[in-house]
Length: 287
Image 1 (spheres, rainbow, N blue to C red):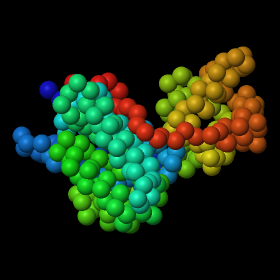
Image 2 (cartoon, rainbow, N blue to C red; image 1 turned 135 degrees about the vertical axis):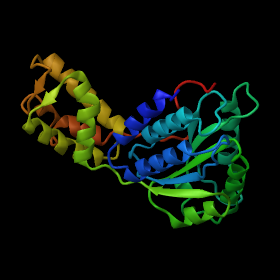
Image 3 (tube, rainbow, N blue to C red; image 1 turned 180 degrees about the horizontal axis):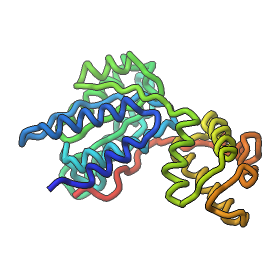
């Protein structure tokens, strides 16, 4: 019987804005998995080039969920995946990042013998240091986990030097993911956040919010789809408590959220969180 979670996850992935290369990769993988024999398809590791706030965690959650639904790889441990940011260590210094990564794998394994799943590793700190011994030691370590772990390396900008360094140690496929523009982010918010709440917007309200999203997305505190979802929740709360009605929201109702207003100014300069160390991704613990 076909696993309906595959179709559900694919639907969520195809609804994403501005990540056409990611969607094309998933569809290509879907076709390969549908035609595979009884054996497990051997996937390459990936290098994702996507700016901070571009939705890495959202893509990670959906990609992991898709791989799990397809049983494309084996999962074992406390969760299906986790994210990790590899800190830079200069030559001659103790490479604490590698020790932390090793500890993360052991922690994620839980009471199991070893962790099996997906790890998303941000290597931005190493873009200018790919020829250094520490980075080569890191790549050798990751290559040694390839039987059990699918590794997704993440950088905020395309980097040929990182790509070449990775390719010297493992199979790698590179994806450069275009960041969604304000119109696409607004469309995502309207479809994923407002319509489920049975809320519609006037044309003027839509223009106002698109301008505000552009300002928020350009700010240093932008955290991608998470920020847009928070923006939508604040809009819905404001409409509810203002007594202006929830079914059809006008630009006048949303004057508090204008691009030149205090709310947007405060939101666009919030300090973003840096993912140093590791945290869980993928929802429920792996079976």
